[in-house]
Length: 97
Length: 232
Length: 248
Image 1 (cartoon, rainbow over the protein chains, first blue to last red):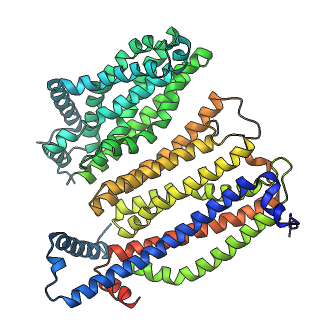
Image 2 (image 1 turned 45 degrees about the horizontal axis):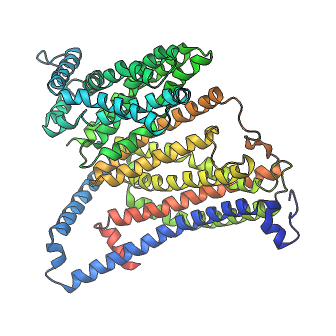
Image 3 (image 1 turned 90 degrees about the horizontal axis):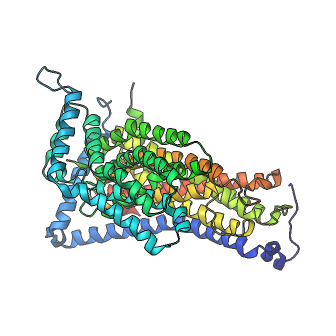
């Protein structure tokens, strides 16, 4: 549109008029930055799904859920319930300012 | 909101009561007063050993060394600002007071600065002499520390209030607080260095003073909010 | 005034549903604009008479640096919402914004250094106000992250980080002006070619503008993705999340 392709050969493109190292380092850093910050959430999502499935299958296998007898999980459960009820309260429309 | 009855003390007397109480406690605990002071002396004395013994080079770095030593001394002293009150529960009581928390926090900051910050300011000309600061810079150093260190205390107070409930808080406090002290450090050191080259000291002190006023107006509000988050 | 809509928007469930609709569009526009900006920048920008092909660095650097300035205001607004209206979604956004903002600041510093190493002949230059204030923005973002990881209680951490973000936002502005002033006063003779205003023709700023748009879209997409994860994790006991996870 405003200009033409600036390079006639691949070697010229890679050399960037002598600033090849700096220019390409910046683009590599940028690419890593973008890709990592898009893939990491996708990976984390898979992890969450996996964790959930594992928990579910364990709970359906064992009637007495040994995992949940551990105090840590028990606490987490209680905390979860607490958070849930707090959420409900927080999301209620109406008399809040 | 607070019930306004005749039995409740006014804000002014609550401020004075908090101030007196904290000064009384500090007078019983000599270490809290002495340690920042000792720290300041020792850190400042380490620089000539580590960096240089040449008087000219010492002159060049002395303003920065003195300010950074004062900054670190103030930071290390901060931890005692709310900790004992948090541990014995009197901080929770303070939050329940009907008077505005802003003034109590301000009173606590003031007493803490009088106890741990002011001694450092008072002794600074002596260290300045040992670090070969030019004689005409003593007054700028003294005045800039006098106006600047309260800002450091007020900023540090926010960090302490945020971390008072945590188990290990020494480093996290430094990580939170130190970046915030950059503006004070910039104008504090400039106030010491620049008048030697003909700049006007009053201008730098005015900027530091403006920072102090802004910190007095805003920082206790943030500290108060942080205390309400940390305690309970 | 009726605030129902506000709380509805702030509910994790409706946010999740809404972003499910937005995401495909956002991702498409992001991919197109970023590809176009990259190709344009790498192939078409003519060499600057002073800086040669290093203006290609500035296309990235300017876009990332400009976008990174949005993080503290964003976190301060989210923090205010957390403290005033206790909407948990705001904290979920703020938490991920801190991490992403630290990334942005770091990339800004790294690309700035790579540009400076050519144009100034040094990787680090204390006399450049933008570089120094960016460094302290980076430190302040790390401080927010550190505070978050030091606190076990989610609710308390949310409020504490919200407050620190608001304080940090004010502080970043003060630091920026102090550092600028400091440079003017302290170091009147700055290195030659300091400003990157040398490259400013439309052949430079048009691809840069496109890159800014692309980077903002990338920020939005990444933030939405990680916020959705945060919702799935924190609300994992909620019925709708369980159904959603079971189906995926």
